[in-house]
Amino acid sequence: MDFFSILTLVGGLAMFLYGMQVMGDGLEKISGGKLEKILENLTSNPVKAVVLGAAVTAVIQSSSATTVMVVGFVNSGIMQLSQAVGVIMGANIGTTITSWILSLSGIESTNFFIRLLKPSSFSPILALIGVIFLVFLKSPKKKDIGSILVGFAVLMFGMDTMSSAVKPLADVPEFTSILLKFTNPLLGVLAGLVLTAVIQSSSASVGILQALCMTGAVQYSAALPIIMGQNIGTCVTALLSSVGANKNAKRAAMVHLYFNIIGTGVFMGAFYLINAFVHLPFMTEAANPAGIAVIHSVFNITATLILLPFSKVLVKLACITIRDTKEDIVVSEEDQEFMILESRFLEKPGFAMEQSRNAARKMAEESHNALGIAFQLVDSYSEEAAQRVEKIESKVDRYEDELGTYLIKLNHKDLSQEDSHSLSIMLHCIGDFERISDHALNIMESAREMYDKKAHFSEKAMEELHVLENAVEDIVETAYMVFSKQDVALAEAIEPLEEVIDELSKELKRRHVQRLRAGACTIEMGFILSDITTSLERIADHCSNIGVCVTQVREDLYDTHSHLDNVKNTPDERFFHMLEKVRARYVLP
Image 1 (cartoon, rainbow, N blue to C red):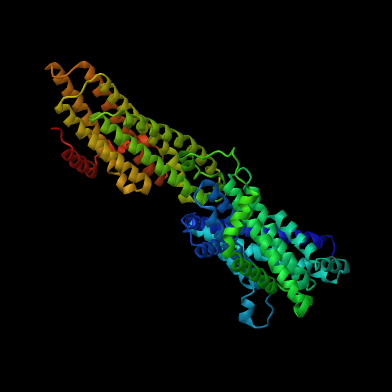
Image 2 (cartoon, one colour; image 1 turned 90 degrees about the vertical axis):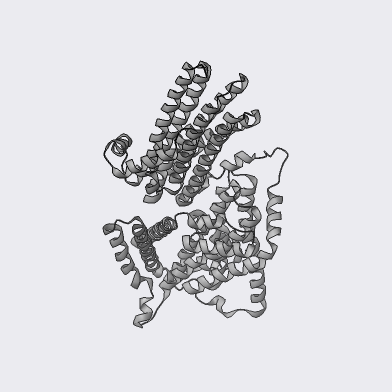
């Protein structure tokens, strides 16, 4: 094997790894975080957990990625450690799909239809289709499908290139003698472990082994322990991911390690014991890609069947290894709520977007709750309720800081067009949610001032204020629904409401001046009324901003003032018809 053969081998390996990465990224974008969402909503049924873990891993083609996600779930409190065990076992089964796909490259036949099943025959067609999708089609989904097809073609081309480059090694005595050393189970396991730990992908390391097998120089006696070691080596990724996580997340990574170590020990112990008595004849035969896939699958399925009933023992072992201490900080309920913005999820942008949407909806809900309580305080003040508004407002402030920071980090990731639009909308709207909670706090403070001064509005003034509050409640609910559903059609209902709220606010102030002249009200109460109505106007303005943002981002336009000017000042029968309907609904007594 000369220098140029080595270059070909390195190039083939590079294409193989790159193709796997591109294909995985394309599959992840197509799923849009939905697969991880399925894992998040797992039940405690261990069999279902195994099936879902296997299915998700088979689709995203990476047990390491699934396990890292599980570590993130456990760290954020989304998943219990007991649930994680089944998913981790399932991930090990799911990753064997890759070895079966790669085993197709070993097909040898003169039959035309069987030859078509060989990846070197159909991958050029997939590559051509993928390139057409990427270059000529505009749909983001179709481009992602193109990435998957091109990634698969590059992966298989890399596999063929590696196989061709290593074929001459079969005639090199030194290479054969090195492989014979791996028939020693301990050396074989160590070799597989180190290779997988370095490239951090059991699928890729199994693919490399399958390429070496096509030389005909690798016996099953050497391949089997290497595969066992590869399963242990894949644990390195999860262990590294658990650094800096809480103890339960570290335990999830340890469960993965213990599952593979114990599974390997039991499987190899039983296998070599049987071989000592029976002397299995295939052990001295040359391994082939399909044989590697069979061993990989049999080991992971057998290990899962044996260890699944003992999942609680694995959890116990992990808890003994990672012990609780008196110094452990108890995470508050509020802190736990913010842990859905887990940094590990950033490696899966589709799912990180789902978590961000959940956090933004929760933020909107909290600011809405604060406003509802503030309205009640104007009618009937209670210090306990007032403190709840203060607490909620503080929580919404924290949401703005943490979610804003998270979204900025996420913005640097490779997002689909849909997720990119959603991220822009969230970045624009979370400031409006925070300002609405600020105005809720202002209304609460006005209510507290009235309570402290034992002052109150007249019955007539309260009736008028309720009409304005109802209109504001309506616009807030509409705006939050527009944000949650990103409903451009519903956003049209916001501007007429905002216009009517401005009119109602002016009319309330005008009527107060009349009552003031008639001696039915005081200047001091006028200031409080002005503060409340101003806050309500500002809330309506922020709801308008939310509606405009959703509309503009969806249409890839960002000139907010121009948009509002067109809506309110350009003759539009639809807008004026909606305006009249809203005016009829909110009439001051």
